[in-house]
Image (cartoon, rainbow, N blue to C red; front, top):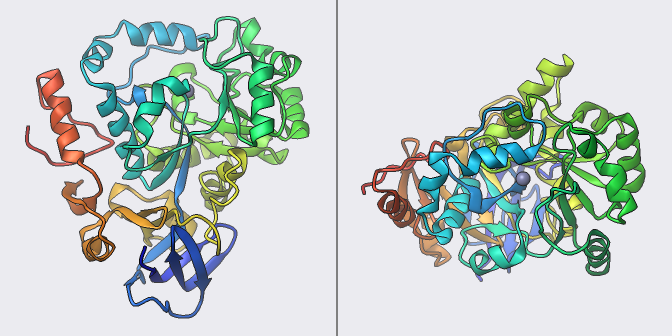
Length: 409
Ligand SMILES: [Zn+2]
């Protein structure tokens, strides 16, 4: 593919702030990051913008993407919520939609919020037919369990076999854990350890029940944690002890969970987390820390060795945000859907402001023009067709707050 560049942006690597820098992209990789002007003939100007690695949403269930939320918590664990979900009229409504369109809906929900990679937690045989057609990336190679308790769904093989597979292939082992308060759930971490599933390849989602001793163990073992605060507060009226985890040096990442329990999208989640932390602990969770929790931290957790940083030789997954605040990290955390100016996946533009349509043209990337939240945008694939098919399936114009796109049925 043609080489091209982005020039003039404030780059968050995310460890460093590089003012007025250029990024050159070649063959799906970042070729050069420098303070000099871009050497590429095709270069877009981004003086008004903050450039970050493409965001990574560390927990979602794409097939479960729908609206509105369902639930009447606080629950004791995830099981009664799941029962409430499956007996809700909106669940029946969702069931009329093809899995392909639910996958696409989930992927577009992530893409427009600057997410380039999502961790979609579901058995492989369910998701595999859909990943190639998505407009953004889902992590394909991972070992898994649904959860640790005896009432877990039968996802993946035996825990020790899954963990051994993760070690052998250097992929993550992902599981829900500590999602509730019953006696068994409170023992989840010990059970996981006893079953051979705890180590530096473990990605532990929720961890609400974890106590000080558990936090010490996960730090010792080098496991990562995924914090889904909005979903947790909705279902359980509380969430993980994230301050203690961060203070202990645990690698914490942020996930949205599905919008039937969690927040609208990852950008919403970042603001929810900032506010929740301040309210709960009376201290600021620095914007810089939040940005790392959706870039560098998940790249480490999921063993994506060449992602999560704006660095030469790394995968060219990038996000460009309108620079609206004094502090560029604040501009990212405060960004709404309108502030996402461009999303680049594997070196190609996938979504952005209509002002960048010429970039899609020059790189021969087909796109559709849409109006999202009143702003003209361009996006790959057929987002409008998907919205029409969903409305047709449920027999009314179905709209989603996480994808506020104008369309006709
Ligand atoms: Zn989940």
